[in-house]
Each structure stands twice: as C-alpha cells, then as structure tokens.
Length: 406
Image (cartoon, rainbow, N blue to C red):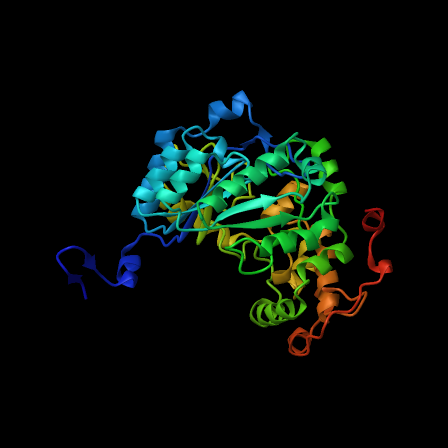
C-alpha cells in the first residue's frame, strides 16, 4: 500500500525492488588507479602523475552517468575507491552528485589527502557510511617503509586529526606486512581510542599479485611480503572467543564441496565493480581481458541481464582444480576464486598454493583437520564442523620452506 502524506510518498520497499530490472545493493567505482603512495604490496597502484592512466580515466560526465543509472536501478550504496580516490580533482563534485542522488557513499582512502575543505564537506554532507582508512604502520619508519613516500605518516595522521575534529565517522584497518607485523598490539590500542571503532580493527592478510599482471618484478616483491600461516593466525584470531564463535557459525552455514562451478559468489550479480577506465568487472579484482563490459557504450543493466549471467555456468576444466578445489570442503574458507587464480597464474581455474596452505593451516587451527590431512580427502566434514575445537598450535614443520624464510 502506498501512503501519500502530502510531503512524501511512502511505499513498500520490496515492491520497488520487484519492479527493478536488476537488484544490486552496492556498486564499486574505482575512480583511479593512480596513487600518491608507492606501496610495496599494492596490486593495482600506478604513479600519481601517470599521464596515460589519467588520459584513459572516466571523465566527470561519464562517472555521473554511471551514478545516475546506479540510483535508477535501486543501488543503495556506492563505494568510491582507487588507487587513491582523493587524487581525482573532481572528487568533491562526484561525491556531492552521488549524495544528491540519495546514494550512501563508502570511501576507501589512505587518508593522507584529506584537507580541511574535504573534511568540512563530509561534516556538512555526511557520506552515511563510515569512511574506511588503511594504516600501514604505527610509526613513521614502518609506515613509510610500506608507502615509500617521505612524510606520508605525518600526512596520514593529519587526515585522521581533521576527521576527529569534525566528528566524522570513520574506521581504520590494517595490512599485515613484515614492516608492521610487530605493531598489532599498538595498532589495536590506538584504534580503541577512536570514537567509531566498536571492535578491533580488521587486517587484510592476503597479499595479492598485480591485478593486471603488469610487472613480474613487483609480483616477486609481493610474494616475499607474504606472512606465514603461523604469523597470520594469531592476528586474525586475537579475540579468540569471538573468532571461534564466528567461525563456528560460518562453517556450519557455508562449508562443503562446491564442485566444478567457477563462480560460487555474487560476482557479476549481487556485486560488480567499475574500473577507472569504464570497464564493468564481475568483481574488483578480476581484470582478465574479455571478462569485463564497456560501460562507455553500454549499461549496467545490460551487463547484469545479458552478459554476466553466463558466469554462473562457467566450469573449471583444469584437472588439478577438479581433483582438489572442486572436492574440497574448505572452499568457503579459502579465497581461491577466478580473480585470485587469474592474478597468480593467468588462468581462472588453477589452484593457488599460497591460499591452499593458508586455508589448511586455518582448518588445523580450528580442529577441522588433523596435521597433514587435505580438505579434498575428507568425507565426514559435517561431523567435524559439529565438533570444532579450540585452536592447536601449528608446528614450524607445517610451514613450507618459503614460509620459514619469511
């Protein structure tokens, strides 16, 4: 039933969604791949002054057209990210345009380019989602060893200060790297002092290869930065009781073999991402040529209704994948997916050893596996979930040679 009060028209939101050609709650827009940082681990960043990247980026009008369609098809939230999103000279204009359409705006940033003017804008026109800021260290030495930019730590802290002064909601998160791995407790303690942090900060512990497979040298560096499972587990499970409760719930709902289907998530359906050059991607990290859809000559609706539905029908053909991943009951715990496989191997269905090792270590920690067992060999996995036990210490012998060297 629709109720007209004279000022607004209220209607059942489910009725509105049923009338939409597609149902997409959030749209990710990567406004630029350029960044003012040169982070040693980054899977996408290009130099801030990269003229070729700047030339190819969507212009203001093109981004607005995408935002118009997003609002028209019922998108509720748009995530603006990069690169460093605040490098865009038209960021304030695009931000206000999105908010004017009624969209909630989620901003991913390193925080260093927040100015008093931008902070005032966020205070005057709130984004309605907490701004998310990644920290790379708690001291200038560790932070700048990651960003490779002098004074970047000072700029990061200045941006934080501006948000705090204006009481703009934001949260901080970390990236686990050798340069900051000994600062977790300090980071947690600092995060507790921030008004909008209602839980311990999350850490991205999966260091991924270059999304466009554009630099073997950078990929070799990234590989050296990866933490071993026995370094990662104490970080992700540092609130042990909450972690075990969450894992118990997650595993009971989602664990089990996924078969040969490649796309078992919402990629290309409930979530999509626009890259800096106007390509609509099934997800933010899947940049394989030919997998995207050009929004400069098409629409989000066409992609979601005519192009991306075939993703659900794609099947793995790699014998190694079929023998392992397709039969592994740990797939939902593992980040193995077409995007990760593409970045690591240049294919969509090659098992990623780095992810496999990390997932098996987590499973041993949770009591789902015994040391040396493989997830694809287990048949009584439902029983194991029911009796999930507290963590067991992972012996050093369980690490690979490469992990020991870290």
